[in-house]
Length: 126
Image: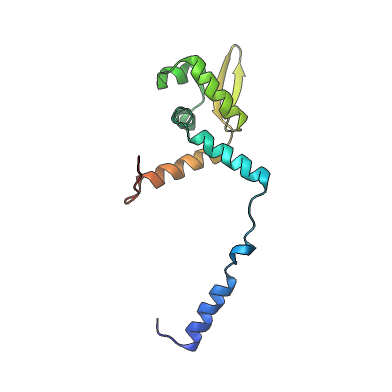
């Protein structure tokens, strides 16, 4: 783009519309804590697998344990943590409790993560 007074004026206008770092509103402490807890929940491989399964359908503890290949008590412990963060909820049907994601936002998060991970050029270090 050639340097003209019109182009400089357009660029200056764009710059003034951008917020200064000191103008950016940070999350409240409560919002920050809730966000960190969500990321912690996603940061465990077993919990991530459980959430991944629940993006497809609601499942019982037994079904999750059988699919993932770990004990029912370990699954129950992880589900308790996921319930505490508000990511899953249990729906009782007689003696059986099926677990499902608490809302559509969680499915959207998983879709975004899968898309990001599958992008070309995305590299991760172990």
